[in-house]
Length: 519
Image 1 (cartoon, rainbow, N blue to C red):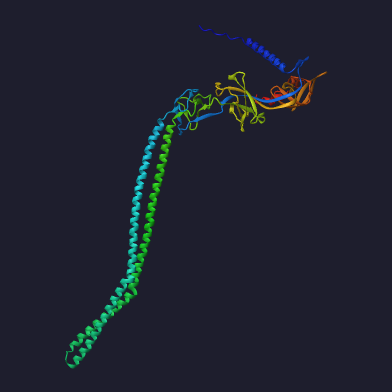
Image 2: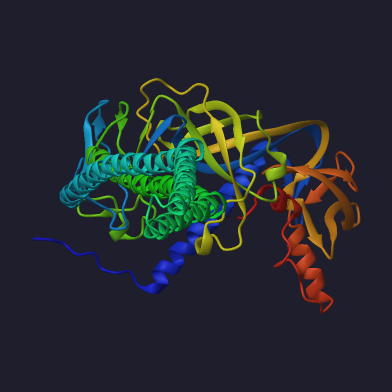
């Protein structure tokens, strides 16, 4: 049988709150009394202005982080992302080389099979183009040799005619002409002899007519040979020489055209071969990249450590690293922190960040270690402010890393544990100080109320540095004088009495402004 608590009435709850508030006020007053002599006058709680060392510190809460942490990201490319198929629970201790996460590889295997087909096709194109190039080179050599032979023969024909055939033909025609002239002379001599015989009565007159016809025939043949010789010497030689020269020139041009044309065809196919080889090379690289991606589907621990998964949007359940989740390329999956080398990460408000520098000493308390105080120093101060977006509003804070020098061995600390860090800014010796509640700001002036024989005196003071409890007074208060600890209340009361609106809601005590940024 289960019991059920009865809700308290509202008036009971209000009473509890009032009692708790009163108890808290009493405890604060008691705590203040432990470090500063105070007395209560007729209407004021006061403290004495004293001299001493003023330690200026910046105190912020943060969380632990590993100073040496290996971050593992998703290296599987693709717009579809990588789907997680198996994963070890967060916080699991793993050894170097142990499997932490496995991605679904079905899509990659499909892409690899398709890419292998493309690569084989590209290799076939390369081989076919190589064969075509060899054939074209042989053809180019053959066509070039043929054109070269034609040019050589044309030049030989021209040279043979100039230096041989022409002379032979000329001599032949001249010999024929000389023979014709000889035959004509013999025919003429025979005609004269015949005429003498006819006159003497030894031959008939008919013989003269026959001999005359023979002479005329011989004379015609001589004239014809002379004409043919003139035409041969003047026209036939020039025509034949011009024709042979033209053939030689045309053969030379044909050779040049053949060389250029065949070279262009060879270059064209050679370019096709280069393109095919580049395509095959790209297909091979893509295939190799896919095979490498397949190997990256299994993620193993790069070192010993505890698995801490990275959640960009911790409030979004769908963004968690889990089985079935799809990760983008280069998205961080998990980290393996070195638990023996930890540091503290804190965020410091812009109002005091100028005081914090690398190398400053610091003390810290980790909640998991109770009241134990650890020591370290500021290692890094961010240059740019870290804005938490809509959750942080307009607050500008700077991430600061603090090392831990005396971290206990095997302390069992984990990243994310809470830590309070106190950074020592400086120490001001012989500083005149009062509690921060004794100084407030009104209309751009710093006001303090000092107890005198005639009552509380309102004074304008010049403040200096401050910490969480005390504020330095440079001018306006003397050592040993007692100051009221309700300066803000007194200013508000004075403004109300004069009918003016108090500005304490907009202005904080100077000490609180200096040491409590963003609070």
